Amino acid sequence: QITLKESGPTLVKPTQSLTLTCTFSGFSLTTNEEGVGWIRQPPGKALEWLALIYGDDDRRFSPSLQSRLTITRDTFNSQVVLTMTSVDPADTATYFCARRRRLRDGSYTPWISWGLGTLVSVSS
Amino acid sequence: DIQMTQSPSTLSASVGDRVTITCRASQSVGRWLAWYQQQPGKAPKLLIYKASILESGVPSKFSGGGFGTEFTLTINSLQSDDFATYYCQQYNSYPFTFGQGTRLEIQ
Image 1 (spheres, each protein chain N blue to C red):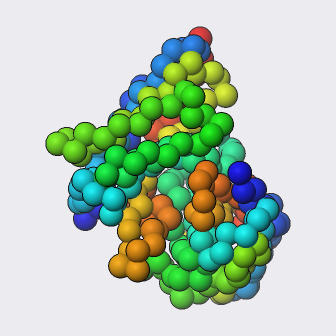
Image 2: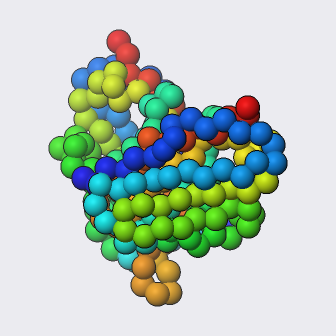
Image 3: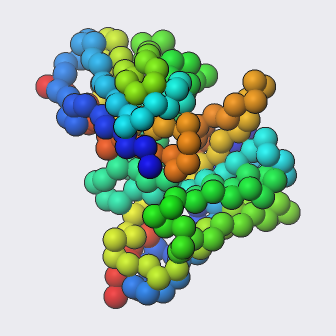
């Protein structure tokens, strides 16, 4: 069974850094067959993709946020960590981690498994 | 970035109805288009990928179509748990982008 679970602070002050952890099970992030990404959703708004890391350490970022994001994987603990610097109230959102995987035909799925999400508020 | 535009933004329908949601891409995404359903307070759930392939476990009342820049999601025989927000997403190229969502509400 595939599970993903986000964890991190619920409240962060403006200008601080935000670190979120995605702990997953049921797959391993050790080859390019698997990828874990982060997607966020401000209250009442649409989904926004942030970053993605594959098991071969290939990393991709949203260009609009790339300068503020870092994504790493910890294969021993089955975790993916997202760090966002210089947060602003506009970063208030529910943050989801999600999985994509490579199919037999070599193509990749979209986001096939999701965590429940974690709400992060940015406020002084 | 590829912009994804869904229409309508809100759709009112009744139990038993058939509805169609449209998603347009600002440039071709081939068949690399997914549809998600999101219930309030929940994570999105993948319904369809590669424009028309039903994700495992998703009822056949959901169907998708299209190629390139125009795509549709059709839901037959609406039931109460189908009233939710639906998002399209292109995964043809980075950055992956979502539509703004279509809220399906009970008329």
